[in-house]
Image (cartoon, rainbow, N blue to C red; front, side, top):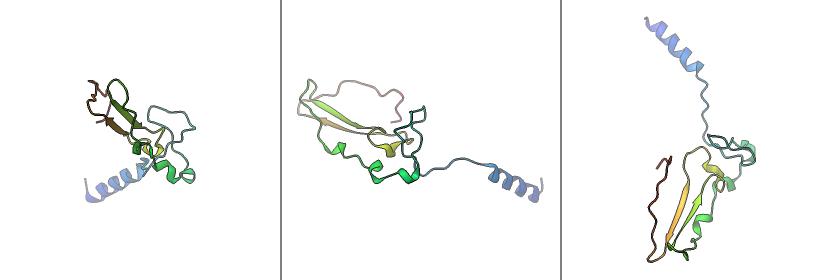
Length: 109
């Protein structure tokens, strides 16, 4: 194959790629949730509050049998996490507290 044919083929392949590249996809919580998360909110409707979640700054209630509490931040509480495959969590353990043996099936961690 000549260099010219290779360049033409390469330029065709680059121009034929229509892959969607997004910097972020803030969840539109009013839309139904699908297997890949929520659909993206219109960029003009995105606010700073979509990227702020203050719930992790509050200690959980550890006055229970295991003396532990987990506070989570999934896409419903933190819409800026949509489509990233991550979530946040805070674990509070009081003195003498335990975390029962558990798993995270399907988790990416």
